[in-house]
Every structure is written in C-alpha cells, then in structure tokens.
Image (cartoon, rainbow, N blue to C red; front, side, top):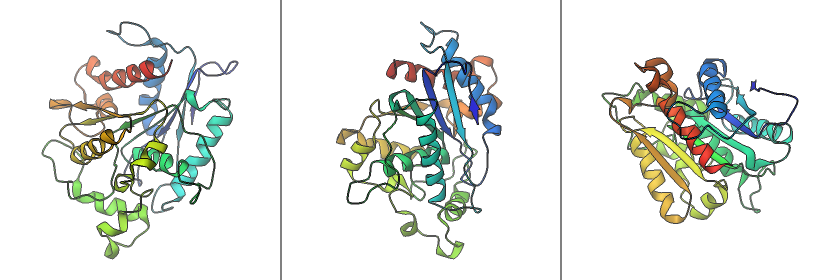
Length: 280
C-alpha cells in the first residue's frame, strides 16, 4: 500500500513500513490511521516542535506480507526484499539514503532479518544484492523469537506464553518441535546473531533507532540486544517509554489508548524528530 502526496515529483523521503501482529495477524489497512498521521507529521511537524519537519513530499510504502501459517520463514523476508527493491527503483529513484525502513513488533523482526540478509558475506551471498537504507526505525521489535527473558508483565497487553506458538508458526515448526535451538538461525531470529562484524555491515549509514516500552514483555531482550551491540560500534540508539506509556508498541497503540490528543501522537513525534535529525 502506497501513501503519497504529489505524484508529479519524486518523494524527498520514503518510509518502507512492515506491520506487526506476531507474523499471524494484521495488515496495512489496520495501520492506516497510524501511517497517515506519520506522513502528516513528516510534512507539518507537530505542536511543540521548534521547527517543522523538513520534508515536503514524503511517501510511505506499507508491506502486506503473507501471514503464517499460510507461509513460513523465509517467505516473508523474500517478500520484503522484493518490495524494498521495488521502492528503491521507483519512489526512491535508486537513492537508498532517502529510505527509512521501519516496523513494529514482528515487523521489526522482518526489518532486522532483511538488514542481516542484505549484508551477508560474499561466501554466503544474499539472493538479492541490495544497498542498505539510510535509516532503520524499530518500534518494540521482537528481536529474538525465543528468550529466557520473556516474562508476563502486569501492565503489558502482550501474552508472553503466546509468543512460543506464534514463533513456531512463523518458523514452520510443529508445536512438538518448539525449543530454543529451533529459533537460533541468525536471520530467522536476529537477536541471536552475535557477530559484531555482521551487525556493523547490516547497520544503515544513519543507524538504527529503537523505541520500546519500559514495562513491555520485549523490554529486557531489546535492552540486552542494544547493550550488546553498542560497545561493538553498531549505531543503535534507544528511546524508552516509561510509566503509563510503557507498553508494547506504544506509538501505534497510543492512537487508540491514549487519553489526550497530545499523548496520541507523542511517540510518532519522537520518531519523526529522529528521522528529521538523521536524514536531511
């Protein structure tokens, strides 16, 4: 799904978005209000900004990948690669520096898997030779499909126990085969990739920006992943929603759960501000 403003001229920034939903739920249409708000903020900025966002003609492409169990890994990564190539050759006009790859939850997993796939070594080349984007933005990414750190949270709406079933459906394994070892493939479960050199190759030129909730189920694993990569020279920066805003994918959920209009767009304003700061 494309969101564009002026088709008569090329976009000055393109957001390539991959939705969440545990690999088994969701669609671009469910995120339509969120994506329209994102596009509007890229143009207009928001109340409280010192300066309006410096983009006059943004475009957003949202990928509707095949959900599990109708397709399993790596089908979703292959679909993302072909869609990213399409975005590069059309709206981005071959300039990857103007592309922001983004995703929430399981969509964040697909984005990280795509970055790792595009940056494999020559001895194990990617099926498609594609340049890295300018920036990656991840909202509560499911960085590791299995982790001992996942525990039920009193305040988060994500059910930690369901993650095992969703991961098994995505990986194409029967429930009887669910175990940690089955989820360790680096591209299948990016958080299990411990090769610093690979992550440095996979990191976009303008880095990786991650926002997540302090109280969400994924928080300990996201924190451990970022803490592991930062000392190795990988440009990963995090922003943590705390207090009543500290649940899973708050920049998306806030559009439906926040009590005030300011809170509805707070997470998106932070994302747009980071894009504005890094891509100019």
